[in-house]
Image 1 (cartoon, rainbow, N blue to C red):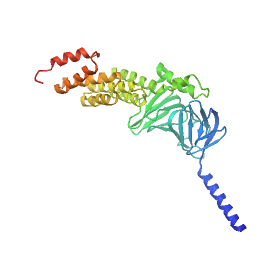
Image 2: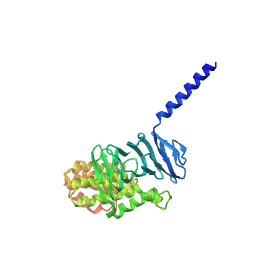
Image 3: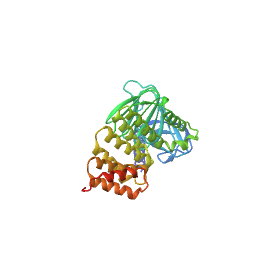
Image 4: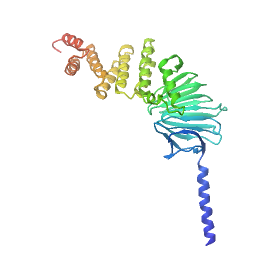
Length: 341
């Protein structure tokens, strides 16, 4: 009987040891605020974290983790992170930022070593630097404080250097880096992100909730500068990121409308423009740019001598916007349409 007991005890110990060996040590909690959760349980100071752990912060909590190689990362409020990969010497480390923001202070890595933040189909890879990554689940925005961060997707890669920002998402090439120290809106965004990774739950927290629309508005404005410089493909990309980041339907519809104007006016892609305008009609009724899109579809139909479609769009416009901003032009064009049409 005793022999059976000892055999059972050895088996249990073996299972426990094996399961412990399967857990790869990732780092240790060195600072926290509020009640961040690790795998659904309240985090504790000096608690060890392992590969596969999921860390979630609410609106009033944040947490800092230190790796064995002294790299430190801070997870800000309203964020979700998965510790995807590392090894015993942190030679190849990967963190998935599901949403929210994460500030990394990465020690200088040896050749062949890597530290990557993965989010929204994009990768921010570094070799000893300080940077902040923000994700709204659709796109990733990276601000580099020091050093160089390679931001890449399946469609390309860019290097963001000190005081530069880029954006990236699946199916899109990364945005060419922009100096955020010379752009007041970007600088303000950076300081907001810097502030909410500082452990004092600041006044900036309320502003951080508006970051998706702030980033979207910046992209819309930046696209105008790019279009004026005849950098139309880059302008389209900036507007794509505006759509991905925006929470507001107003901002989304504006970005889509401006894409349609770029395609029709500067890129000789009328069919592409019509697809975008119809997207606004279908998905964004009630926004300012619904009226713009309805008028533009009628105007394009008139220019293409598709008078039946033109009449249809403009009659719909007159019904929905009897005092609309384009009503005079609509009346003039309707009077110009040949009677037999």
